[in-house]
Image (cartoon, rainbow, N blue to C red):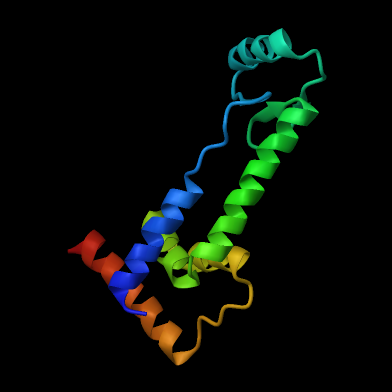
Length: 139
């Protein structure tokens, strides 16, 4: 796969990854004020208990189930439509290149755990991705 094809796959991955969940009985809150405001909106339509999830996510059981289902669909779409090298390109160019490539490897492996980065063809593509990033960031 050449660099142009990899970049095309990276753009597809970014579009799929950025697919926002539709509004529902859930919200993100990082302050008490935002929590109180959002909880009132949820309770206007449902008297269900509000549950807490990591990363500031709150919602009713139904709302959180719908949120999870949406992102399970996103993950499935990524696994079916994207390539490991497209994901690696996107993640490496998304600041991971600033810190080394470990996180980009890990994020790619989350979707494709059996992908062989060390095969001759894939290793050459990874070197091209890193060289492309260096050219963009470092001139």
